[in-house]
Amino acid sequence: MSHMHTAARGSRWWRVLGTRRYVRVTRLIELVAAAAAAAVLAVLFIPADPPAVSLTPVEQPDLNVAVVPALDSAGFFIALYQGLFNAQGLDVHFVPAISSETVIDDQVLSLPMKAPIGISCGNYVSYIQAQHAWDSGERPSPAQPSVVAADLDIFAEGSVMQPAAQGLYVLPGGKIRTLADLEGRTVGVNAPGNILYLLAASALASDRVAGVGFAYYPLPEMAHMLKVGKISAAVLPEPFASQAEMSLGVVPLADLDQGSTQGFPVQGCAVTKAFARAYPRTLAAFRKAFEQGQQIADTSRPAVEKAMESLPAPLAVSKVTAAVMALDLYPVGPVDAVRIQRVADVMSEFLSFPRFSIGSMLNDGS
Image 1 (cartoon, helix red, strand yellow):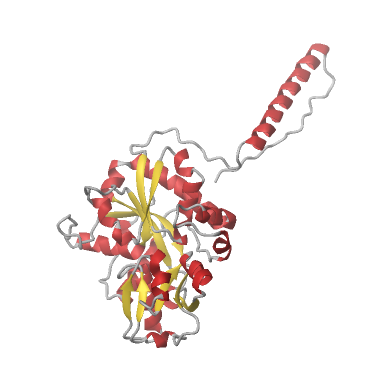
Image 2 (cartoon, one colour):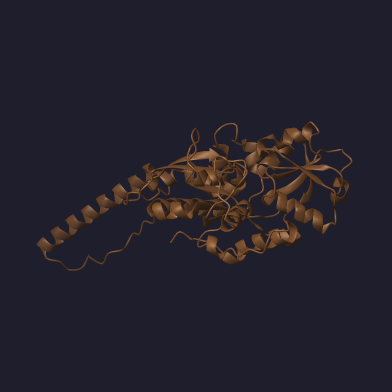
């Protein structure tokens, strides 16, 4: 985010001067004063913090970006809403994603009747699973739609979980009051084996709760599935948790910011290594605008609320929901390898995932 600063410097010009020199100095002061007045008018009539315009053409100005429409993506949505991508020469098209797992193959394959995805922002668990599959020799193809595999660079962090940002929720007045009451019941998550599944599995394992089934529905449909009894509890990130609280009065059963997953990295942005090689200026431009959005998200709640209210229907949140939703942390700077390695380690602990080193996937975009 850029800042305008107007510095007025005092002058010691009024000393003993000859007549001609006096006239020259007087004229100079008039010019300086006129310039200062013009600057003040510019400040009054130009929006605050205008984004700097990129002068270097990008290779791929039209860019489809698949993003999970949760509050973890606040930095992206601010950059989109405030025109920060446009300022970098990018025409970014937001493609709503159920989970990063559901769009990773679209980053690898060019499929008919589907928009090509250049960048995705979603959960790290699915990215790590796709990279492990690729390293193991698996390849996606139209003939094998169940194979999710990609050679990926995680070039930016999206969010780090904070209290109440991700939770398990149930309907009020029911029989489920503790995690133990979920034994033999079904919990709703947005995709199998992803970050929300991992967070729920970690919480259940910490309380030694077994025999819990999972069903998979898109996040915008989750509250309805809870209402009609398809699931007994739902894993909801913000703003879906606050929306369900407003519409159904759901109550939190467990805050997932606890134990092994306290302060957990939830989401980042990734491209294929092939994309990073082919479009380095495009990636650098996207990352610059995204980082600006992240910094704003981490320091201005009103900006987060406005961006989430401005999402396309039916994803936009109401002003009331925006005012109460719990925020994450939105990191800036190089990707923290130690932090992201936590995801792979917890996957090994709770998902029986093979030991995996995150290092080959990290690219800070510089």
